[in-house]
Image (tube, one colour):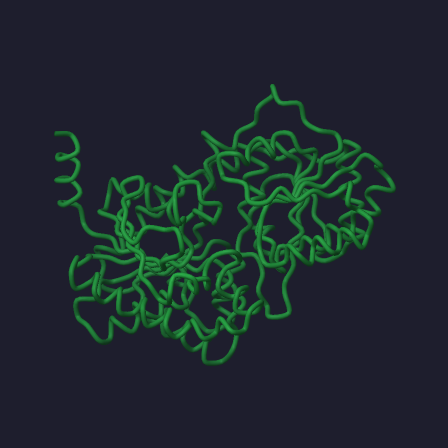
Length: 411
């Protein structure tokens, strides 16, 4: 009876269609889950339907935490490898043959979006990433009057890494068709202004972290005096190779220091080779992908968390860096690269900054932290800005406003 009542309530809610490429393939998937975390917090306001790419092992249709998920096929199952284990931009760079998958990926997204719109008649759409999700909705808005008004959120790589003139034009085209745009840091709004997008229609609203229930301090867990922690995808912009370069200097000053690497990605093999080459086999351990539920225990015991982000040659760089917020939420001292998006996170709380790619500065900052001279982050500021309760409410208001207006929303 209750399930029937809830189903009836969902049927009366406005339909929100969410387009994304990054999404959990199953419960406990180590792939980034921020889009799902947002979607499940919108189910009290909308009937949320997520459309994303299929991957091997994932269901074609399912309901997860009240969110209806549809996954479209874009290649034979064994070739559906464009999205996961590093992201589209990284995968294209690492394996150029995957460019052959891109036309099918975009056409399948376009066709599937059109079909869902025709069948479900959503009142609103939310595209995560300007390209290709925003482009697809912008094109359909020209071709089919049934296309709903839409919000676009850029997360970083789609804005920073795709810099050619035709792609900049596409981003401006999406901006003119969207009813509103959001970015996850002020640095990204500055980048939008640089490429000619009117930032009066661009709001800054980060994704969230569960700071109330998951990423919390635990005074019963003894904090290590020598464990350095890295968490993230093993891709160039995360900058892990610079931290590995810093390890010989750190070990010389603190012989018991060890580095724990939690993550997976295309650079793992080269990073392992670097560790062997530097003779760090006993000081660096790779623990692989760690599910979200297991991350707090790592942050609570580590002596210091390091986010050595860099800007790549293509211009790609971190859009926000929520792993730093997770660590700070667990009261772990944080060392971060001085990039605009990272400074946006830590503008009002304590962190130790280093210049991107500077191994000597990284070593000095880590050594100082291990010796007990690093500042401790303040949770109150983080809660007010990044907790999912706050972020979910903010996106709910943005989407409901977009639902009611016919012209671009001014922030």
